[in-house]
Length: 351
Image (cartoon, rainbow, N blue to C red; front, side, top):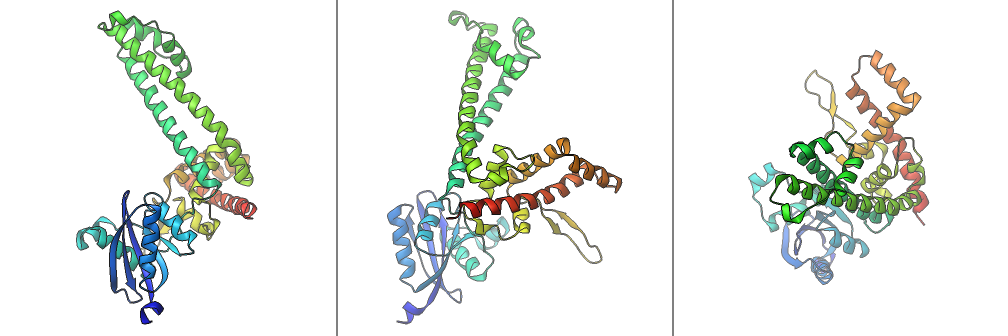
């Protein structure tokens, strides 16, 4: 009876194939640890094992965005409070060691102490669908950029007749010219013909990736407009930028507790760096770098095309601020617009 009334906290160190779980009481004492398979049945066994020790208050899970995503969804569907736990830093691991049981116990104790308070993304709504498509798009864009750079490198070192024909061309023209190159399979031992064959293959790859990116853009655009019409309507926010901001926020709007929390999440919040008589703030270099890049894109667009932003820039220049400092200020102001729009979009999505 005492065990059933006891309040317990769980912690899980997640991996691809297995999850190691630990359970502690309300004073931080270890009650047990065990390993479970990273499957649906394993999730159910893990939860039943934890509840056998008493009344389960919360579970701290490492890697809720990767290996722990399935477990976090399972626990949330069973009305269990899930807390996102950061992995221990190197200094802590050097001092206390590294093993699956140690990490699981550390996750549980961080949850009990309140040092881990992150709300994991639910990953069950339209934003998760957008994120999945963006993963494919980003991979295609990265591969296309690599192929174009390889083409430029081959052209720069190509034999003179080929180099003279293909140098100083735009990407589109270069791809078209290389696709039309005549390849003689019997003369590939000649550097010029081998280079031409390589360029033709890379050009076909670029064309295929461009088509893939175009298809993904067509799939993403209506999803983003439907999920975030107000965010998409902000000045300087296109489909890709809106998709990034949605992905950063996640499907559950309760993660955005305040405008300041979103700024911190995007790496656009100044943090105190005072000591003694010195009172100052410094740039926060953490957060989601993709979201920070999205804010940077919006700021640059507004500096070029929005007269109010350009007037603000001129005023701050007269006050002695540099361009980088002005961009940082603009990002923080843009977060205010984005936060208001995202909250309105999420409120419209909530049934």
